[in-house]
Length: 390
Image 1 (tube, one colour):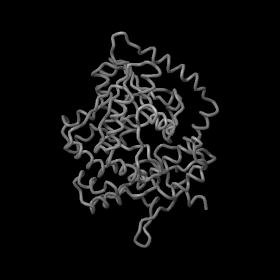
Image 2 (cartoon, helix red, strand yellow; image 1 turned 120 degrees about the vertical axis):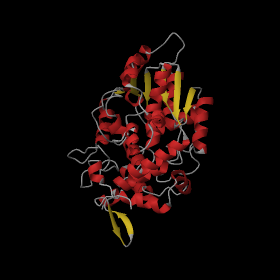
Image 3 (cartoon, rainbow, N blue to C red; image 1 turned 90 degrees about the horizontal axis):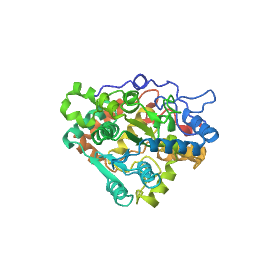
Image 4 (cartoon, rainbow, N blue to C red; image 1 turned 135 degrees about the horizontal axis):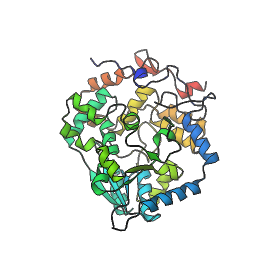
């Protein structure tokens, strides 16, 4: 029997579910805030950017930053953590070909590469013309961590996130590259902690565990039976090494207006990026998060825990970008949000070495009574953005 989780307490969620009046997100996204007019923090920030940000001035700030890290010894000048996807591939390509930086891209391998994901990584290197280091962890340990994360955190994707966040920092230390450029600040772009909304940087000593690791860092897995030596690829380098390097982690979205759809068009033209031939399960798009066969279960668990899934996240940002109206976004959420990722289900069960019965026991352990109710033998959402419209 899988222990029932207290989702409200674990994520400090409000018991009353509310939806943003401008987009499709709800107040169940961890750390998001709503104002008195029921507008979410991400929509407020998007509006503030439209009215107050001078993007030419921001680009001038970027030029000053890049100039500070130029080198004369032929070494790499900026590290870009990159899967080869539309966002990071654009950053790497622009930094190299528009701004003349010597770029190293660093990839933390997905759990299980999709064909299209690996093709896009190869295209970024061979068509986009950037150097790359691909880090692939021990498959036996990675599967063990994935199963643990699925059962304990309700997110099988967490081992990937450990490596995605920390492996590039390890490579930065190894190759002495102080400047690390990530894409957008997800907390401010998608809704979350707004304290860094007007800063270009992320502090590697600060909120990493809270914002990226759901409160459970890789070092905490030792108490769950994982040997310390097996966690090395997932760990943050010692802070004294990052301090000695003078490491600075910046967000490209601070310097350039962050529009995912425009990143997609840029990469089709410049890095050989190819979208999925079929729609991604759980949403309507074909060009985001294509790399990993496990990916769909990350979004599905978010839907189970918070009542908002992948279509909500995609549509909310596209409404802020004025690519969708709210009415269109609501209809897309109604049609696709929470769609079960059936395509790789057998592969997921085999990868985690679990039965289908155990899978559903874990899933149901994350259903909170303030989000879900069982009627006629079926689980149904108590609140959804389309119900809010009635």
